[in-house]
Length: 266
Ligand SMILES: Cc1cc2nc3c(=O)[nH]c(=O)nc-3n(C[C@H](O)[C@H](O)[C@H](O)COP(=O)(O)OP(=O)(O)OC[C@H]3O[C@@H](n4cnc5c(N)ncnc54)[C@H](O)[C@@H]3O)c2cc1C
Image (tube, rainbow, N blue to C red; front, side):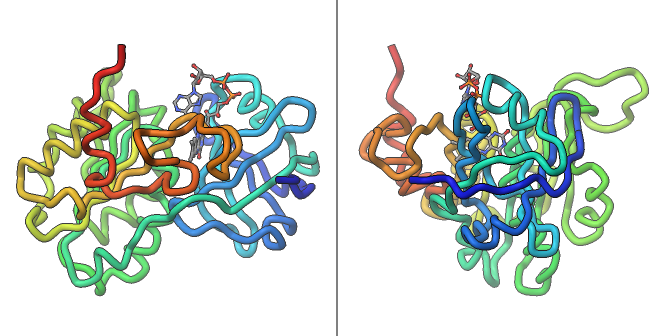
């Protein structure tokens, strides 16, 4: 439960209000998260929040953080050399073995691309292991698209579709929600290992689209990034039905949460 003291090795604002932080040495001694897992990052004197693995920079760990409240604002304000605390790695990662020899569909909405990025990197690096691969990325606007400089490499290896909710007049790409693009990528849904991350409502609709096309619920993995506190299944803050998402998630097969996701809140 005690965070290890670390320092910021590098910092870059990669989209408005969204910062990439490279965390040096100590991240290695704590342990490097697998794609889909997360660390608890502690902004000294402010608080601690769960943040997914966004990538590796050599032996260092990269986290991408959007400033939405007190802790994420404090983390985003850190500069190279500043101190932060880190606990982890926590949670389940993406099960890429489910995709071996099969078609793959990846659907990312907004910040949901962060935990999917290391998975996409693995797929692109070992492309021959998989059948057809469709990658659908959505964001609010073109300036909110994360990792856009990597799209050329990804698009050369997989069937990539990018869309935004709202676009300025000079945008020549697609406009609309990610679920409209499920048929724009050529993937055999009966067979595909499907990976989804984004806002919860988007994941619900995206899962429904692929279920309707024949993908079994246990072949759909989602990352349920619900508000968490302890990260070790004690506090119950992230509980969804019988599932403690910090320990049994954040990556879970849709089949495990389907019933709970149908329960209406009051
Ligand atoms: C497993 C996991 C991985 C995550 N990975 C990342 C990541 O890689 N990058 C990143 O920027 N963020 C990530 N998040 C979200 C991040 O943890 C929250 O944004 C953070 O906890 C907000 O804390 P705060 O003190 O800055 O703001 P708060 O004051 O706690 O919250 C600000 C606003 O954001 C809402 N909020 C807080 N947490 C969440 C959440 N989990 N989902 C939806 N809304 C929320 C609050 O309800 C409130 O409206 C992840 C969350 C989880 C559970």
